[in-house]
Image (cartoon, rainbow, N blue to C red; front, side, top):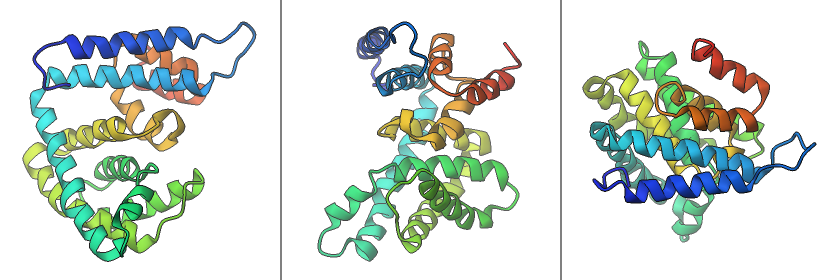
Length: 229
């Protein structure tokens, strides 16, 4: 959609997002936002990111490159080691927020360990295992997580030198949001991707919608990062 020179599909997506947001207006007196309203808010942010990508074609290529790494060598190694006789079933288990966990943890690790790149795979594996336990996701073998991270990291690490740390962080965060099956239910995506991306790729409307559905602490950190505006 971001590659399409015509804005029609993007505008249709934005119209659907706005309609969904309007249709989830909570009744008077209800404070806690519904799951549908949270989804509508994160959909609004996703539409903003797609629009941003349409104006930054280089970023699309970076995202495609990382996506190819995950869908190519990483999946192939996991199939070979853990797929057994039912690789599709093994892959299906990984659709439960594993890939977006991996991407957002990579983005965080790049920031923390830009001067110690060799420590990143171990750190990312730990973050994913802890995140899944905290959010009560289905358990995964640490060896599987470690293999996926190490296989993904080697080619991604080379991108640090060609694209730069900040660009690679942005790439991982945007791709994490785009492929996450439900950002409204995935705290790691909310904190590690949507929050930093809000500073550069989201319109004020989407920021306001996210503020209505996420915690006061999240809103405080968002506004603090935007200089209090």
